[in-house]
Length: 223
Image 1 (cartoon, one colour):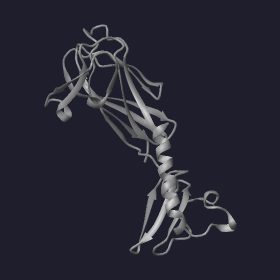
Image 2 (spheres, helix red, strand yellow):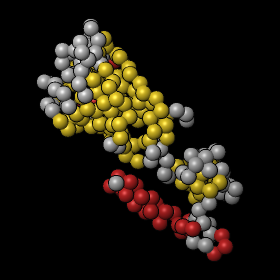
Image 3 (tube, helix red, strand yellow):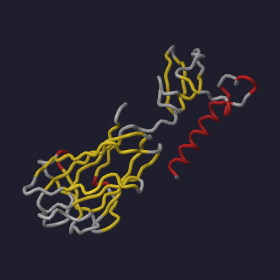
Image 4 (spheres, one colour):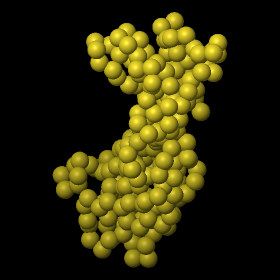
């Protein structure tokens, strides 16, 4: 995963710069083997010093997060060096089409954010991707769009695994600002995640496979 490798490389450079300023490791161990898991740093770094430690999830950060604590200007602050975001929003006008026609972007003040996007002309098996950074956890996926008599059915995959099947966007009349949600979506690792939407048929009453969407976003089960 190139993005994760870049983050690791940046972290290694940061640690290299910090190393001369960190207190000597205990028991003759190296800095790399002496990063301990704890709730807060018991050393409580004095002015001008910092400490590096692993969180156990009870106070700063989630379990396993790498925390840098430093005191400067008589103020102690924390930096989470590994924790990913626990929120993510993706806009459909930034999606990449992987099958079918290009996205058309519509402006309409009736829709929240005054816009939505769709593939035109639409067809079964149309697909697109989007992506975000998220930490591992359990999330609800929300999708904001427009239902109509010409709208199709969509499946959602996350990192190649189906998380939503047969999400139907048909309605007899146009309805703006429809939000569909799917709970208990498992994100199994920290990092970059690929979200894919694929048209999978249409309602028996629908006249087309079009999918008019504004955005999609993940919200954690808890903070």
